[in-house]
Length: 196
Image 1 (cartoon, one colour):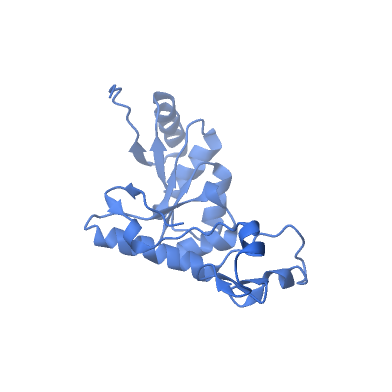
Image 2 (cartoon, rainbow, N blue to C red; image 1 turned 60 degrees about the vertical axis):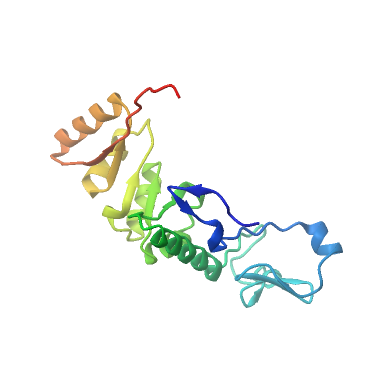
């Protein structure tokens, strides 16, 4: 399947960003013993490989049990680079950001950081994790309504970009900043209440 949606004026269909969906019926009945799924996954002699390792052999490793999630660093990096190329070719100043709620595996987050991506967060726990992993505060965007005071405090104290999306959230941020002596970096989400 090829990602074909156009967002922010960037057309990704010409950059072959792929999502692999495995249909076991097709694999059992239709494919040869050896075939490449994408850069990171392939079948060799009816065994699924992630890069150079048989997935079934992962279960024999120390401290690995079933079920297990397997990611290909090579495929993730290829996808990141394809998005970066598409954005660069758009001629617009666009920043690639990874939504931590999609997968907060520390290894994935470190990979995103190493490739210069911003992280978009929705909880204080995600914020703590991102900071603990060394994500630059200026490359963190903290979204979401219903933030707890300690979450707003951590965001302001750390210097991350804080989305303010309600009058309550604005007052909360002002109160936290006054109490802690902080100056917050904020974005305002505004609903112009226009009926299309």
